[in-house]
Picture 1 (tube, rainbow, N blue to C red):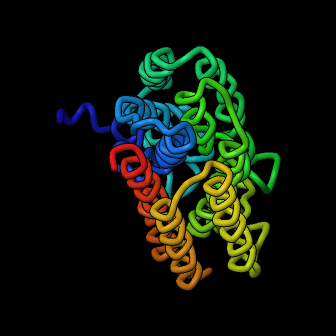
Picture 2: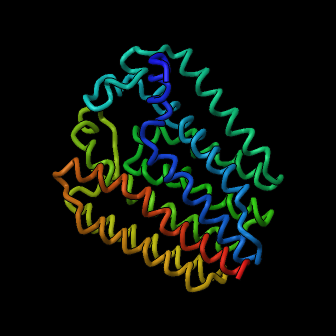
Length: 291
């Protein structure tokens, strides 16, 4: 692509696809789970829409975060080369790019049923407040969980036109999972966050980070299992859940509070972890309907 596009690719984090994968996984899991619950065939059209929407809205969220944090980013070694902090793009250009991404997300949202459209607009609240949370609370990862997990609600409502208990259990699971993997990610930023005067669960948990993340991951696996049981999912879906839980255990065995490279590797691996659950649910959905 043209060199002039590079700053916008970085603003939207298109060069780091793990972000939109983490946003997409709850959407797909919930869509498949709702289809299983309602004995419907896989909704591949909805899944494609959610993929487009996840890429657009993850990009919009990252762009908004960079706009709000531009002064902090300029002071932190790891982020001072970001396009806005380094002066590669102007604030006005960033806002226009943000608007374009939001319009793509809006088009996807308006393709859904009325219930889901309203639910989608409600999601803007945690998305809007998240960039400010690191300044006022040690739990910004929890607010990120509320925002990044919203697809667990949207996916179900897009199929069913309403919400039910399995969607809420899946949402709770995704929130805990998000807090866990973003805490691991925050291990890389501990010294920079102290310098910048911002907060995180990695700093809050300190030397107890591994057992705390273990509790979060245990809750994520437990709530996901409850979601599957209450939706009437079968053996294949549960195998996907087991694979998801096993991946979380694999991560916990490798967390090192002093190894930033490993923290990044483990964080990125969650792009795979989420799709293990998706794969089990999609296979169950297909088998349930077609076999």
